[in-house]
Length: 66
Image (cartoon, rainbow, N blue to C red; front, side):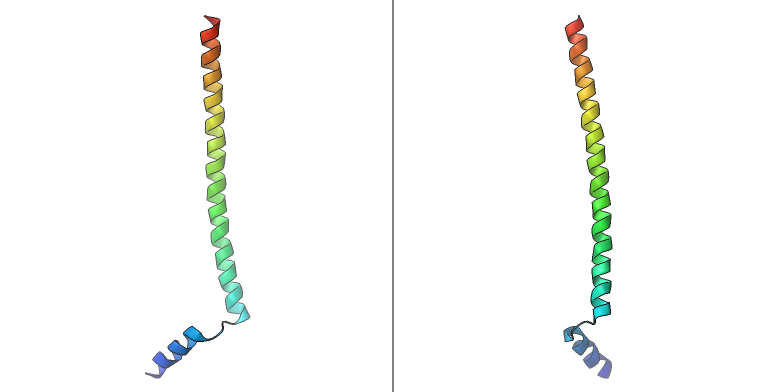
């Protein structure tokens, strides 16, 4: 029973500076992972659109050369 009371009080107590720093670090690591994923996606889209432009330019050039 005493453990339940202590857990309840812990929910409402102000977190220590170390606990806040640990939470912030965890959040920063998560956001970095998300940023890397977004970067990979953006790089893939740049490649895709570049290849698409090259393909379409070759197609148009081939059409005009006929």
